[in-house]
Image 1 (cartoon, one colour):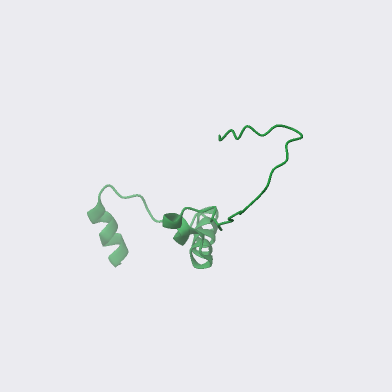
Image 2 (cartoon, rainbow, N blue to C red):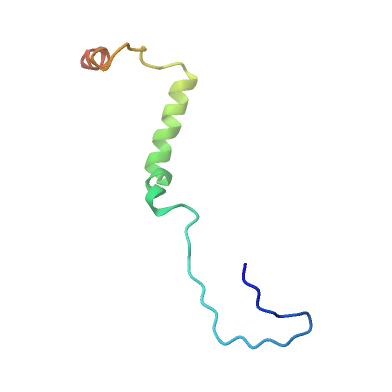
Amino acid sequence: MITLGIEKGDYVEVDQIVLKPRKLIDPSQGWYWTKEWQKMEADVDEEIEKDQLSAEFESAEEGLKWLKK
């Protein structure tokens, strides 16, 4: 917090105000909020609700075999 020493009743002259647009989302995380990604998230949520999940696997190799079927 910056304290300017301005008190109630003081006159203040404003010389310049600079407004810079800022995203509320960290730029490195912007991909997550694209329409395409959000559509995929919604699709996955729907699949989870419908219990349309893959089987559980003991190893990555088992999962790869399942995917190749």
